[in-house]
Image (cartoon, rainbow, N blue to C red):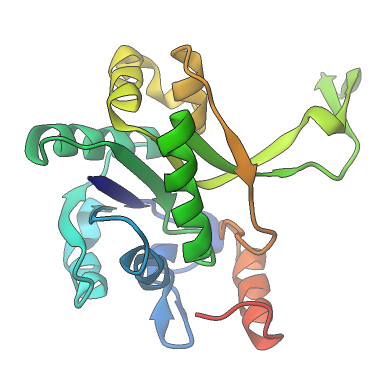
Amino acid sequence: MNVGIIVAAGKGERTKLAYPKQFYQILGKSLLRIALEKYEYSKIDKIIVVANKDFINETKEECYGINKVYDIIEGGESRQESVFNALRYIYDNLGLITIVSIHDAARPFVSTKKINEGIEVTKKYGSAVLALPEKNSLSQVNDNVINKILDRNEIYIHQTPQTFDFQKLYKAYTNFENELKSFTDDASIYHKAGNFVRIIEGEEYNIKITTEFDLKFANWLIEEGKINV
C-alpha cells in the first residue's frame, strides 16, 4: 500500500495572512485542496492529512469529497514532529505499508506525474526526492565573510514530495526522535540514518508558498497560464 502524508499544520505567519496559508484560495480552491486533488488522482492509496490543531474543522471542510483521505490528525510543534505524528499513526493503524509520499500543502502546484514518478522510483531504489539543480553562485559564510566557494554543480534544491520505503523512514525518525527540530526535511533524516537517497528532477513551478511575495507569484503563474489548478 502507498500512503501519502499532506503536511498542513503550519501557521504561515510569514505570508502576513490572518489565517494559515494552507487555506489561502486561488480560483476558489485552497492551497490544501489543490494539493489534495493532485494526490487523489495519483497512485497513492490513502492520504493522511496533518492539520493545525486550531483548524481541524476547517481542514475537514477542505478534505470533503477527497475519497482517499483516510484520516486527519493533529500536527506537532515543528514540521518534522508533524510528520512523525503521521508516521506513528500509519504504523499503528494501517498495517503493511510499502511506500510513503510526504508533501507540503504549501507546494500545491506539483504535478500528479511527479507524485507517481516518486512512487515508481522508490519501488526500485527505496527513495525519491524531487530536487532542482542550483543556478546561482554559492558560498559558505562565517561572520559575513566568505569562507568557501561552493561548486553549484554539486548543489540541488530539495522540493516535495519526498518518497521513501516506509519502514526505513519510520526507523530513521524513531532513531532521531529527540533531534527532529535540527532537521529541515525528511530526506535529511533518511540520509542521516545511513540510507541511500535518490534525486529525481523537480519542477520549476513546484514552488513553496512561504511569504507574501510567494502568494503574489502564485497568482501570477495562474494568470499567465503557466499552471492549472
